[in-house]
Image (cartoon, rainbow, N blue to C red; front, side, top):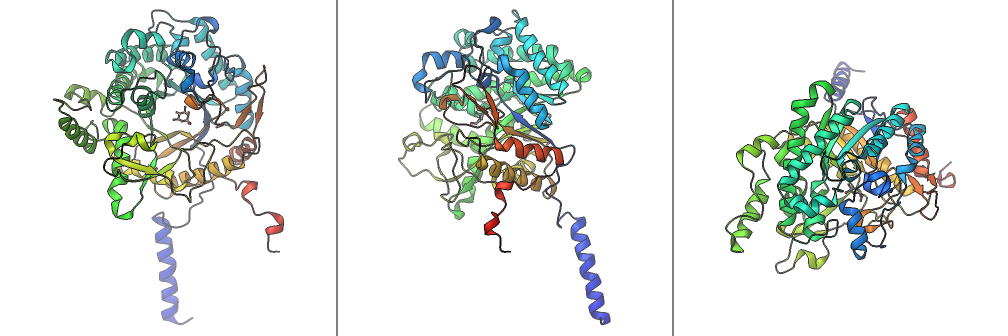
Length: 513
Ligand code: GAL
């Protein structure tokens, strides 16, 4: 080697070392760090059943499924459901056997407090949830507890008008206080509210979900406004009265799709879509101003003026509320499933006329899917793994790299046990999450698969199967059978390596030997 070629060889090595130093080189994306928690999730209404057992009160979903069965695709309900209320020991044994780090579940407000308020505590319900915590402790699975996952007591809907009434915020905060007192000594990770966006948009905007109110353009805004207040009050109560003793973390869980502009020259539309969904419920908490995104405030105020209103349909926070809400979360709870394309809404076309779900009329966007994206059993869910990495990076950039707990991610995949689509989905999404963590330095700390059990999928009833475990709903005993994905996850959890699923390896006769 001449002296000039040897010096350029040394320079190349130094450059490579410098790149690795900056994290631009190869990183082992398969290794799952010891402090990265992997779990799976359910929610109370979707799995418990036992709808009147031991003094439980009625929730809005009990009422909705019984009185508006026409709005549930298969007319079903959760009177018995997966019967998790009676089978939780068996269920948690399965979680333990497969080595999950954590289990996310929610508390049924109407089971614990049948009147909605702590003036009447149902002790049988308290024992039930302590039973769950006992089993998790025995199996070494960490509990992540959601205080409210869409199923508030019907009595609060009847008395107050539910989340359309500002006083719900205080009633919710008192319920949260009761939860911290009772379960806080045993739980480190609390979520106040799951997905205000979906809950409010479908519950009080389109009416597709309980309580079935149809007030589009008004109801969803009022509902989110009050839920953000309720969340923030519950957070401040923990901060002031419990944090020092219980040393836990409290946060909110928001839904964030990834949006891509259908036409590259319209990149700003993807940003608008993000703000009207993820930003709506995230910016007030994680943004520097403690308020809704500018584009929402401006657009809705202008439209309201044109409609002859004296004030915007998007309510305003007072400076006092801004102070309470800003910074009221110890982590960013993220639910992410899929991506969508967006384009400008053609003039004269109403959003509801083209079956656009999950997009308010006010955003003036038309959404669609890239035909190249593989589909699933759910019409709204296409497989776009890079979307989760892009969303994690948006959260890092917009909100100052908060700790992110992915609280839901997963797919429906028919009713069979050979759920290879789910294995592919989880493998590719988890890979992207590890890339975001290791290469892009997104502070993501947990990945939670939706869902542990096949269960009641809201207005789709039992027609979509999100479970890692199949439940036989024709069997009186609701027999559970783990699907292939559970076996694959067990190897991943045991080895702490994101192993290539066997189903993704080339078939023997395809190998060029
Ligand atoms: C989420 C919701 C879950 C589950 C999931 C799959 O929005 O939090 O309860 O239904 O969607 O559709």
